[in-house]
Amino acid sequence: TGMFTYDPGFMSTAACQSAITYIDGDKGELLYRGYPIEQLATNCDFLETCHLLLYGELPDAAKKANFTKLVTNHTMVNEQMQFFLRGFRRDAHPMAIMTGLVGALSAFYHDSTDINNPEHREIAAIRLIAKMPTLVAMAYKYTIGQPYMYPKNDLSYAGNFLHMMFATPCEEYKVNPVLERALDRIFILHADHEQNASTSTVRLCGSSGTNPFAAIAAGVACLWGPAHGGANEAALNMLYDIQKEGGVEKIGEFIKKVKDKNSNVKLMGFGHRVYKNYDPRAKLMQETCNEVLTELGLENDPLFKLAKELEKIALEDEYFVSRKLYPNVDFYSGIVQRAIGIPVPLFTAIFALARTVGWIAQLNEMIGDPEYKIGRPRQLFEGSPKRDVKPISAR
Ligand code: CMC
Image (cartoon, rainbow, N blue to C red; front, side):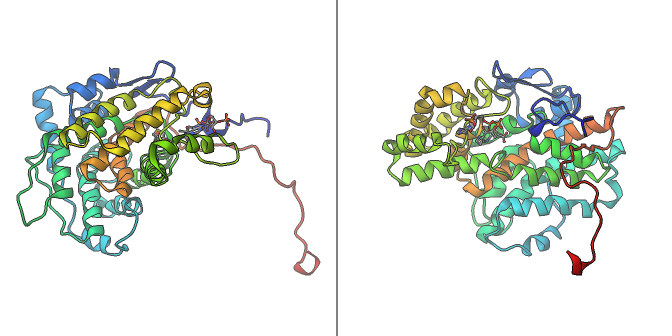
């Protein structure tokens, strides 16, 4: 006691040194390996972003082709996975399924899961990035009772995901390029975000020398929470609730509840530990939201209108202004995903799919760090001093 500094929520403790993602919360800036998120989201696709996060540089055309080939080589999952899936209730939450499936992947690659072996880590990274979309789509198809669609490797990463989600063996499925681009952007915006709760979980879990699939499964479990990855689902459910109660006219009442100290109601999709100006991802997401709704003829979508109005009112309200609460990426990503046809409970699983590359890049960085040690936080002990056990009759 007394030797350690207590820092609840790691508000001022750096848990690692990192060269991957930089956030300037006051300026509302997000850089992956030095590149602004706006430029990546506009000029690159998700697999280029994966290459950047994993290897430190954007690929040239030849490297991109190689990397794409490597990933597409691994898009299928072992057929046994289907039997594992069958153990779940049909109405299981996709994140419950994903925590299980990702952990179960460890069992298929006994010969290549030594986290301290760079070649093992490399192949595990490729397998995870390649298989996450397949697993998420399988979890979805399972819950609706449709046959699984095998990956189509001539499609883009996002296009293949749309195919596995929405195609059936009965008819030709054509990927809509606007939706494909929107989904790809969602993936890019969620790919990494430095030392957030799930990434820190992956690092801590991996620091024990466990296998990479197990470490990523721990990240999936952490991401599930509504204060983290679950926020996109929670944000959309919040909009549905306000809509049910009367829509735009009821915003005032809802905001009142949020401001009431005793209510515990939060404006989901608002606020961020690091961004105290705005979340640059939210701006890009709003842009994508406009594009997708226009493409689908949903410009007058009442939920989108409600979200915009809610944002406007909150941004003018003293409560939110004084606390520097701005919309985060999840405020609009739910509306985009819903418009694409993705069911609400799947949103967080898609976040997990996209964040997988960030988790792996961070895990690799940690293990490559010569100062890396098992993560072992200390505590300030506040319990009983030493005492003697009495016989049960005397307690
Ligand atoms: N609605 C209403 N009040 C809020 C909100 C919100 N969304 N967020 C923070 N506050 C208040 C909070 O009650 C506190 O007020 P007071 O000082 O009067 O006690 C003040 O603002 C500071 O908040 P905090 O909880 O100390 O901030 P934090 O850094 O611990 O929490 C957060 C950050 C993201 C967990 C929080 O803002 C939140 O719960 N937001 C809603 C959930 C959400 O949208 N999460 C997604 C984050 S972005 C994607 C991701 O990283 O997964």
